[in-house]
Length: 335
Image (cartoon, rainbow, N blue to C red; front, side, top):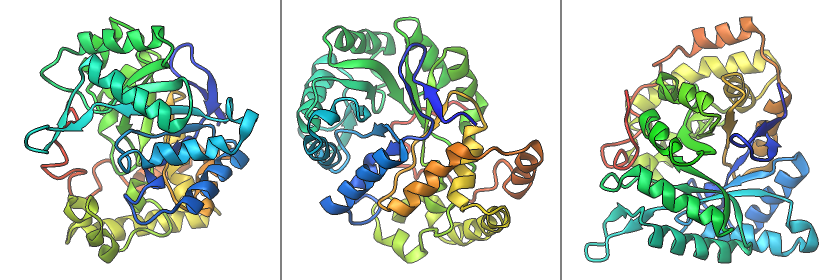
């Protein structure tokens, strides 16, 4: 497998595995500044140069920790990472409820705050984190393109949009990346998004590539899942689905071990074989787990292995939807 990937049509070459920096916050458990520093240092050591964050990850904590790390690097910081961040998720001023705002004024204002926290003048990639359905995506794309002209981002993208939305946006400006959950446990992107991204030279950035720990050697325990705000209400982490998912992935863990690989390495290697335009961004607080992810860049899977993995975890094996009803507010369903 290639160890590098081009961002979009004309973007830079980057390592073919990136890092999802939501884990630099307490989303999946406590993460302090020392852990964040260690993981970002490991990214450099392992050659992982694409760092994905957002203004809402820990209410800016993820960006601030990346910025603090870069500030310590001095003159070496400029070309160390190709950073992506996002905007568009906000709270209603009166009700305090989570909502979406894709107005240019809002997106640019949030990007300015992100740049300040990161300590940079420009990011490599700026996404609309969730699409505001009441606003035409063509208008939103024009606004994003203006941020490129202003030198605040080099490339633009959308998170969790449908293939049709991508095609509409691409008629206005090249969309360098679309971010979507994609793994052996979440295969919906194969019903149109993988293909549309390839057709339009758009990088498909795959978040949660190890199935929120199900596709690792140390999956989250049921008790831990029930202690975290996101997983305690997520159908795949509720019983009896949780037990069924552990049982299904036990076979995958054994298969990986039989081939001398960590389960996470095999899961990410599988993703890299789904298209030259697919970029997994695993998130972790562990340097050891990050090394397992990076190793996937050097793993080549034979046709027989790919078929055997499909037999162990066939399409649709996962018990429970990937989101609860509340968590589905925002992502575009397209199949």
